[in-house]
Length: 128
Length: 138
Image (cartoon, rainbow over the protein chains, first blue to last red):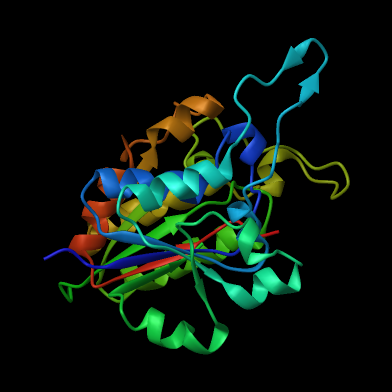
């Protein structure tokens, strides 16, 4: 039986322009493709990934312009569409003034008090 | 004396940037010394930890030649860890994320490092008693 894994993303926007995604959301997708039951919890600044109306396009350097800017909200939604649970800390979102109505529907808000119970559901917590 | 236990480390930082890489290698050293098997999944910049072309250099500020300076090189540390593991009869299985290698042109790794990807990480997790992530931080 596979271990249930929770990937926690706290540190947001690590190389997202270079990679055109978030490295841990990408890794989660790839681990799930390898049949690992992995879910995601977004904490701190990483809750911003879930805001629908964001646009990272427009990067230009010299004559180069980015063809495929990161679409982090789509990547998170795709994980949920594929069967992963995508949790986020509701308090971290409130602190940043993020209206729940602006968050992608598939994301699941978790209050801070409920985090211990959430973590207890998993065999392995990977805190990225 | 091996314990039969296996621990996996996922590393993310490149060498010569933060103390986390050195600390992670010290943890791996301690784990091997206690007779445990170790798996390493090197992700993103960590694929440069075993980069074979790392070179020691002289240090004029220290007033030392390259030989005198004996500059630490992570590739040498990892080679020594692999040798120590082999001598102790435990396993140190180091996998570099292949896509991360390609992005960085970091193909020249020391002997004993193999190319892999997330499926190897999943296999490591399933076969391990525990897994520790040492990620890049702001």
